[in-house]
Length: 496
Image 1 (cartoon, rainbow, N blue to C red):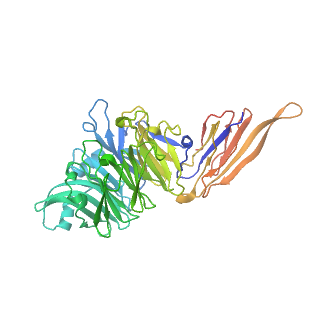
Image 2 (tube, rainbow, N blue to C red):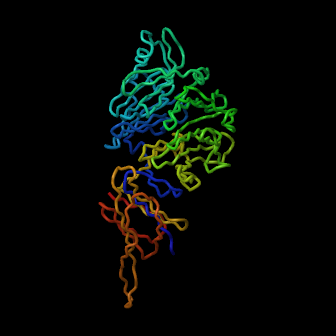
Image 3 (cartoon, rainbow, N blue to C red):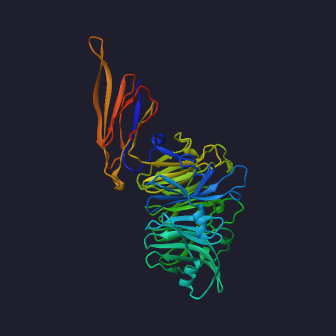
C-alpha cells in the first residue's frame, strides 16, 4: 500500500510552523530533565532571554490542595542553553531585592541582554545580567527626577522597553515626602539616568490602578505606548485600553464603548505590537486587531482562532503571530479547547497547534514565549495532568521521517534567514528490493531527493512505503541513516 512520507530535516537552529504540527520536534522540560530544579507542579508566567543565552523564567509552584497562587511558592529559574545547566535563582533574586517573597509583573530584555523585572508590591526593579542579580534603587529615580526628595514607598506595576530610543519605561506609584502619584518614567540606557515622561491624563489620572496594576507595552513601529489593566474576573474593575501617542503625549481610550465594540467587560489579558505595525489585544471575547486606526474583532465564530478566551500573543522571526487560546469551560463552553492559532502576516494564512490538528499536549497551552529561533510553551496549569514546559527548536542533530495515510506531504528543511549557520544539504535515496529473473532478489538504490534549503521551507515529496522499501537519509556533516519505511507509522531518527 502506498502511503505518503513526511520528511523533517532539522538542519539549523531556527523553527518553522505548519498545520501538520505533529511533525515538529517539541522537547519537554521536566523535574527530571532539569535535575530537580523545575518544581513538579510548576506554571511559567513570565520569561525572557538574557545575554549568554540564559533563559530566565518566573512562575508559581501550584501545590495540589493549596490555595494557589496565594498560598503557593513563587520561583525564578534559569536555563543556560550553552551549558544545558538549570539553576534555581529564587534565593539570589530575593537576596538582591531584600524581599522574602517575589511577585514579578514583567520581564524584559534590553539591547545589552540584561533582563529587567518589576516587583509590584513592594515596588522593586531588578536587573539580571545573565549571571548576577542587581537591585535598581527607586530612590535613584527620585534623585534624578526630584532632587532632594526622599522615597517612602513605591509600587512598580510594569516595565517595558522602547527599543528605538534605548529606554526602559516603568509605570510606578511613587510616594515621597512631597508627592504621591502614578508616574510614567524611563531609564536611559545610554546616559544611565532616570527621566519623567510628561504624560498626564488617561490612565495616569484613573484610580483603578490602585487596586491592581497598570501594564504597558511600547509599540516601536508606531511610536505608541499601550496601557491596560489585566482583568481576570467579572468582579475586577476595568479601564479598557489606552494608547499614548509619543509625538503629542495625548492619550486615547479604547473600550467596549469606544472603538473595541464587542469587548464586553473590557477583559484584556495581553497586548502585543507586531512588526507590521498592528496591535493585538487578547481578551475573553476573542482578539482585537488594531490596523490603520481601527479595530477588528476576531472570534472563533468569525475567524480561524481556536478559542475566544485569548491569553497571550507573540510573534516569531518569520512574521507569524501566535495566539494562545484557553479552555473556555469557565465561560460556558465545556467543549472548546484552546491551543495556539498562528497567523502569517504576509500571506494571511492560519496554522495550528491545537485539537484542530490533533496536537493534544499543545492543545492545553496557557503561555508562549518566543526568542527568535525557539519557542517556549507552558501547557496546562501546573497541577493539570498534561501540564509541562515544552520547547520547539530547530536542532541539526535531529532528522525525522513521518508516514501518514492521507494529506499533503511536506519537507521542512533549514532556513538560513537567521544567519546562524549556512543551510545544509539533504540527500535521500530510495532503497528497494526487486526480483530477478532467476527468482532471487536484489536491492537497488535510487536518489529521490537532493537539495539545500535556502529561502523556501516547503517542498512536496511523494515517497513510497512498503515491505521492501527503505530510505537512506544523509544530512551534510552527519552520518547517514537507513530507515525502514514498511509502514506509515511515524519514525524519528537521531543524527548525533
